[in-house]
Image 1 (cartoon, rainbow, N blue to C red):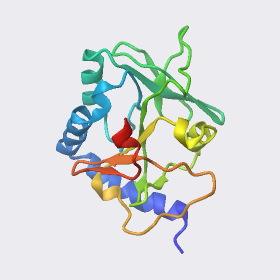
Image 2 (image 1 turned 90 degrees about the vertical axis):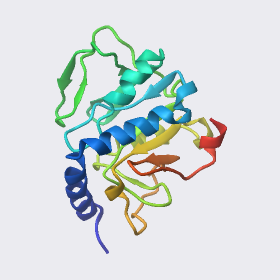
Image 3 (image 1 turned 60 degrees about the vertical axis):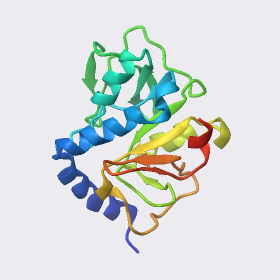
Image 4 (image 1 turned 180 degrees about the vertical axis):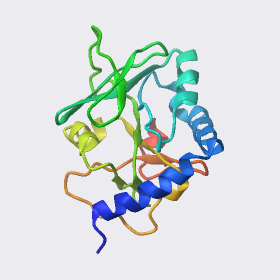
Length: 194
């Protein structure tokens, strides 16, 4: 059986190649703009690393609609989401990820978030997500009851979908949906309720 680490290497290479196609980034952002996130006011996302789907197109649209955007700040083994605006200063953390410089801002409560755009390395047809291996998203959302969690939407290029079921651990938190440049896949009925 292929290990999770071997899967990460395989899918990161696929993601790297796909990330070089600007049209794929644009189509994913357009899909997010057209989706029911439109009516939400508190949405978390992320500041993309070079291989990840860049969300700036969606963020710009959300700011014009007065939606509040939050992005993660990671310290040691914890992650929290902080407000993110066009003029928010960023610094690079120990993982090489850009995050807001904390200047008198407070993290948003996970109960206040309505939707979270989640980066990933790979996903499968059941909503299982393979991340970078730090477990930050699983720990952050795993403490909430499934019905109390915000809508968790994976953001990926289509080549990141695994044809086989990904290996799971008991602490893994499943996604409600994934958006790619080709489609918006749903895995739970939370999308219809939102």
